[in-house]
Figure 1 (cartoon, rainbow, N blue to C red):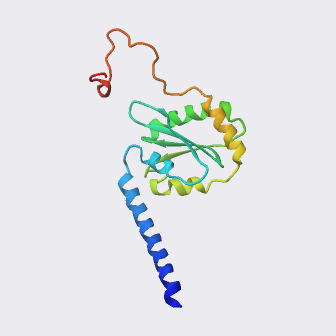
Figure 2 (figure 1 turned 30 degrees about the vertical axis):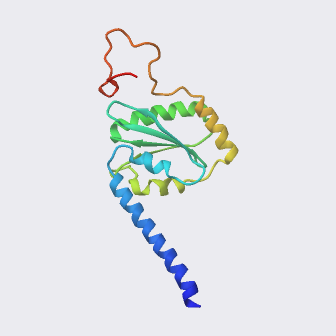
Figure 3 (figure 1 turned 180 degrees about the horizontal axis):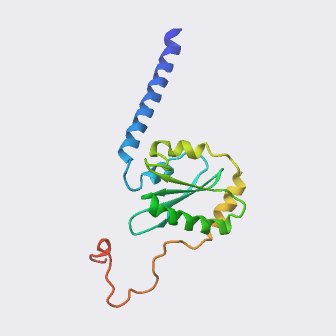
Length: 172
């Protein structure tokens, strides 16, 4: 009788330990890299809608938008001083369509007033649940109606304009 119950329990315990250690290794590999917060946000379980890179700047500081049961969550990656105006601008844009919905903002990092990468997912899940599924769907429709903050210029390239290095090369 002990082997019939002990074997599955031992397998389950081993699986849990392996999963936790693999997750810890993943967090240490991603820590300090560009897009680490986005990788964690995209792997969240549940009814979360993640919009990557809704705001950014030339120094590669990026703000991601997450919509879930708590409301709208803005997650910034990069230098905290440069993120402050990016997050404030995105908060202002979102507040235009999300009138009575709470807007949270977090900065990913290891410094003061930042959320460590390994605690980001846990921090978001612990936020109070204020919206239900129909409210989340309606909020997503309203947020999709916003014009993008980072727009690519439309139309033909101006005469004498230089392409960025990553875009140069043969066409076709």
